[in-house]
Image (cartoon, rainbow, N blue to C red):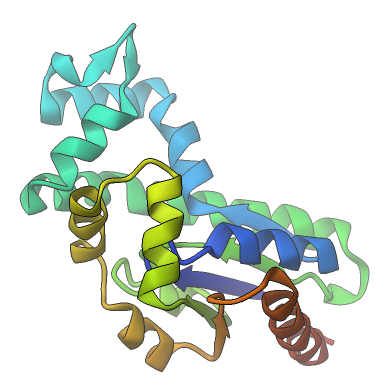
Length: 199
């Protein structure tokens, strides 16, 4: 079973992913996959073709420069997504096959953190969707702590489907506004349900 984990920017998806891993889920992050892809020569060459050589620093894709470009220009973002999304999907499928091959009785549950799950149409590729929500004050505080200005945060949020809509379309919703223990309790409840469905 592949579970897509999604939610708004700064909502704490990575925290929730780690909690699923602690409970025994195989986990994967679309962002980590993208970081690996950016180091792939063919991908790097395609991105340089799109954005020009100034997107490089020391021969590698400069992720800060790339983010600044794609979050201020929708056309550029869509071109980059057309290049990367099929490669991300292929990597997720391969990782799931590998995890399933190692797990007896077909009980593998892989949770994949995919910020743009609905926007990229990846919801059609997963068996269940978990959306992480959080109140705006908690999100703002988290993003400031990570060094994002309110303007940067707004640009990134504008590139995504509204968090309420993601929650409405999800099979499970985890509210990550409060204490970690409360989030953990919700994750455990979802995990138990997923394990029942996978067995």
